[in-house]
Each structure stands twice: as C-alpha cells, then as structure tokens.
Amino acid sequence: MNTEAGRQAKFNQLAQSYGTDLYRYAMWICGDDALAKDLVQETYLRAWKALDKLKDSGAAKSWLITILRREYARTFERKVPKFTDVDTVVVPEDSELEPEDRTEIKLLRQGILKLAPKYREPLLMQVVMGYSCQEISEELGVSKSAVMTQLFRAREQLKAKLQKDGVTGNVHELF
Amino acid sequence: MSMNFSEFKKRIGAEPLSKDPELLRARESSPEYEKAAIDAEHFEAKLRDPIRGILKYGEARALAAGVLVAVGAAGLTWKMNTGWDSVEEYLVDHYRHDGVKLVSIADESAEQNVQALLAEFNVQAAPELAEIVGVIKYCPTPDGKGVHMVLNTQSGPVTVIYMPETRVTDKKLLAFDGMEAILVELRSGSAAIIGAGTQKVSNYYAVIQESIFPSPGSS
Image 1: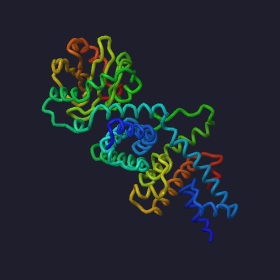
Image 2: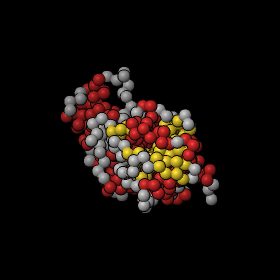
Image 3: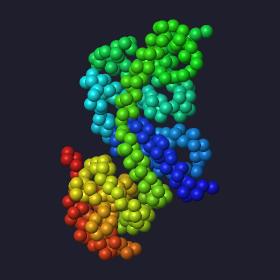
Image 4: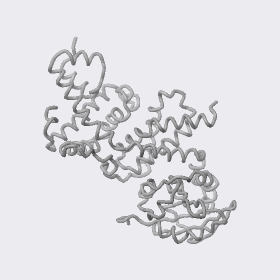
C-alpha cells in the first residue's frame, strides 16, 4: 500500500516528466492555449485520482496520453473550443534565424494545424511523445500499417505545403 | 531481399529516425536510398523545431506546479459536485474543501498565471491585483468553471473566487467558521471575497469590483 507521501512523490515524478510534452500535445490537438492548459490540468487531476491503478511506471506516458485524449473528446462533447493562433504561445524564434527559416517554421506550424486529425494525431504522438508506430497503433486502435501510411501522408502534406507556398532552398531537394 | 524503393520511401517517410535493421540495410544498399534517407532526416529536423518549440521549459514546470497545488489540496469528489442549492452553500462548501489549504501555500507570486487563466473567461485583472495573487487555479462554480485566487494583502491572505456565469446578490455578506465573505457583482460575472472575520472583507469590495473587468474587445 502506498503512503500518501509516496503517492505524492509518484505523482510529482509524473508531472515533472511529462508535463511539457503533454502540454505540447494538447496545444497541437486543440490549438488553444487556455484549453490546452485546462486539458493538462484535468489529465493530472484524473491521473491523481486513479494513480493507484498505474502499476507499471513504464506505461505512464501512454496512460496519461489516453486520459488526455479522452478528456479532449469530452470537451468537444460539451462545447466547441475557441481556437487561437499557435504563434501566440510559441517560444520566440532565435533571433539568429534567417527570415527564410522563420517563414518555413511558420508555414509548418500552419500546416500542422490544418492537417486532418487522423494525420495530425499520430504525427504528434511520434514527434512530441516519442511513440513508436506500434505504440501509436495501440493508442489509436488502428493497424500499424495504417499508422505508417498516416505518418507518411502527414509529412507529404507538410512538404507539399512548403513547396506550394514558395519556400525555396533545401526544401526543394526533398522532392 | 532488399525492399523496393517505393516501399523504402514510405517507411522512411513514416519513421525518418528509425533504427530498424531492415531499413538501415536498405539505406546502405544504394546511393538513391541513402539520399532519400538523408532528405527525410533533413525534413524531420525542420519539422521538430516548430512542434517542440511551443513551450518554454519554465512554463511547463509552472503548469505542473499549479496542477500539483490543485490536486494536492484535496480529492476530486468535491470537484465533481454540482448539487449546491445556492451560491452561499457553494461558497461555504468550497472554502471548507480547499480554502484554508490554498491560503497556507499562497506565499509566492502567481502573477504570470493570472491573466492567462482569466483570459479564458474574457476578463482580466488590474496589474495591482495581479501582482498580489499568490495562488491561482481553476475551480468549479455553480455554473461551470471559475477561478480560485488567494491574494497576499496587507491584512493577510484573502481568497477571491471568480464565477464567470453566476449571478449573485451584490454586497451580500456571509459568515461561517470564523470567516466572512462578501458577494460582488462584476461587469462580467461575479466574485466572492473571503477572509478572516477580523479582516473586514467588505473593505475589498470596491477594489475587486474595479480590478476584474472584461478584456478589451470582449462583449
């Protein structure tokens, strides 16, 4: 049986290990800073309540993402969130970046937000949470080959956006 | 047998950083495959910055700390409760739940979180108010989500609960457990100010009414 202090320590570890990535993930799926923070808070609240069910600390990341995704689905059931520009919450760009690089980053951010959820979610799980295709497959309940197709198409759409919107240079070498 | 180029491009496009031995062998099998893999890696480097550069590390820590405050304060049973018969019953129940606990930890400035949380309700706090907020977190209200703040005032900690959708009887005074509360109708939503009986929370009525107001451009 966990002591209360042990429980708190276990929870602190979860919050510190995954807080950043959970927020990033939430921000990219909902596009709204306040809602993303609320989703993370609700995720942790539910995690706290169910903490004793988490037996394998190695499964914590997957467990938290599952909670967050369910909470997001519930949010959509209740209301349609208002969306804001992701650029309002991003870290200011390195001032040494070339203007072309800044344009590229902006285009990519816009492109990610415009991806259909079936492409955006697996991409975020992979890039933000570090999931393998197998883990994404298990989380989304689709086949691994379907996940690989979604990931491939997500990147192809983003490359196409960069090309269509006229970013030149190295990006052209990708095609 | 090596995989064909089309299959290789799809797999490397799906997992550009994969260390799968089959992919690595295919990559080394010809310059064409190698170039495709390098291109995929270059694009991945471009992609990761925009996605992961969305949050400063310190902000994430602050967020996690705020959550710890919220869940550490008490369990969730109360949080899920929506069965209050009146604002007054809600306030007493709310304060007994975590009011004292939050007051006890309101020793650091939470100023940077104040405007962000209030903005969700299309209101903002005057700077003079924001800078004395020691703890702020979301909380339930009789009509949905609200904000629970503890102010570090000269007379000691004073709790303010902002209720964006709740109508109250303006200036109504309550007393419970040695505490005193006053209800405030705001230009947008309402608030309750709660403090020790000796603090005369009615003294804070005017400043709270003036200091929480609609954000510019909100209706």
